[in-house]
Length: 418
Image (cartoon, rainbow, N blue to C red; front, side, top):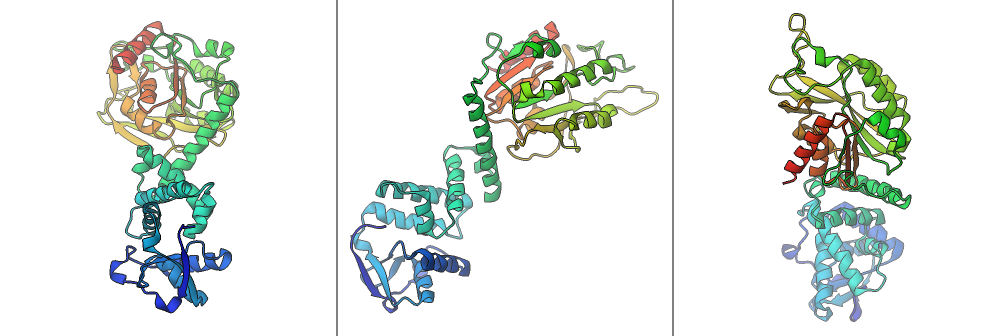
């Protein structure tokens, strides 16, 4: 409630200068919402007027009071208010302006609520809702969005509309709660397991048997596809760093992931799982027994047309790779991205099948933020780890059983860290 002296004046003595009104449109919906609020809980704020009866603040309330048949109206004269109260009036007028962006409306609500808390002890969000004639849930949601805007959260600031921003914030809060629960359970954030780098030389199948540390909420799986790519007629193993690629290796790694899902993922988490279309049906069926799996895969189109050519005499060059997006528990994504990325291959003398960091960053935007604990159990060149770091993951761990690959991944990690 505004401070100062209140008076009651006749409704008919009040008037509005339409040419000076801040709000461009006084909608029937806004008037009806205010009428219902006043009828239910009364008039919380008096109208603010000049000594001549011109309404400075409260045109919607004024119109609603007319519909309710009020003859006498509580008012406060503008010259009795201090600067903070005048600012509160200005903010209240701004909150429902139809010409303001949703970002500015949320920010006006944040400033209004903070100012009321400064003016009145124990001011609540419910009181803000009642004062403005809007739902308490709307105040809670807009304040949460405004808080992220004030922090400079680019995902929220750049959202195309309020509903998208609200969804981003809601999912982020849910992820934060999950991380807090992990902390309460005594699972501390991972430190780099090797001096200055988060890469261990280890076989995933052996490592997981003895692992007893914190859980992860994103596992990036780029297992050997089990398609004997190292033996393709036009393969790359001789020219680039090769590795064993048998079906037996592939399914052993899949089974290890599944049998240790609770140890690795706890109550919820995501998996990005790369695979060969040769095993699409079998892989989808196997993973679906234990995780939610989107059957429409993520697709990396290799724009330089330099994929693999298994048999140049009988089939085309394969210039795309695919991955399933899986989840354990009801874990939400951060924001949606296109399920296809077009970009060139990345090949070095050290590794025959390096994933593009730019491509991984694109897909990781769905699942990586400051609450992410990332595991890559066969990290190869380490590009997924670097992508996770770029997007601000809280903790990162990569395993690579090949000592040469692991050492090269560490060098790339340090070099990219400046």
